[in-house]
Image (cartoon, rainbow, N blue to C red; front, side, top):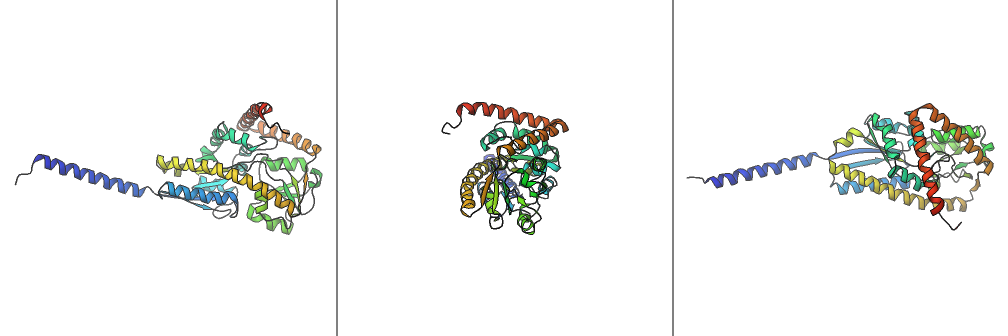
Length: 356
């Protein structure tokens, strides 16, 4: 029997195609990634609920090729240790607050919105999403093998909750205040003579009940309400002068990211941006409701006096000058943020709200 050359060629090329398809299937089968994500958020918070939606959507879009398991506050790493956990790849991804990483580099404290910084969340969003903010943050994180991304914007924080009434800075003298580390706590301590403690969320209520702290700062009205302190903290003073437009961040282990094929990298980046928008908007709307609940539940709310705000500003300028003199990176960040705020403010003097 004589086999025609054309038949031989057909069989040969068919075999090649089958081998290629088999190889692709094996390669595709091997490209499954399972990450661990440690969040600073408590389990009942909006940002953690949105984090679960973010990871579920990413799993769906990737056809199960990229599974990220989120963990609420304190599960795998706690507070400032989230940064080192990502750096050492004990976890692949983390979410916290830039000022929490200030022990690694003091310049991180300047990445968040310090006193008299960006006064509203849209100016901060512009700086980090369309300006130089993310580039500056990655210059700090990448030497540690970490990619930095903005997560979401709580915006203006709530203020201080306390058992006894606080009417101004003088009432905080020698008090113990739970507040995040870095620039916010430094300015508060210098302006009020208070002792500042960066207690992690799961420890706040027990510390307040035992008298280990006298007042509590924790994110926005919604975040403060979700902590469930209104039964023991009957007083509040607002707003949070120390962080007028706070943002949360994502930390991604560079090696873990580089292992992803380009399509999964793009899905991750796109999903992060979707999370940023939905969490920022939903959380801010929830703040309106939470503030109403504080008032309806009889929490007495005070505001800082003009004299107190002036004291805040004088101290803030002094602390920022110390940061700027400490190292060129900090001065560079301060200068860039002030330059952007100047342009933003000049524009909105013409195009801001005109009804009040």
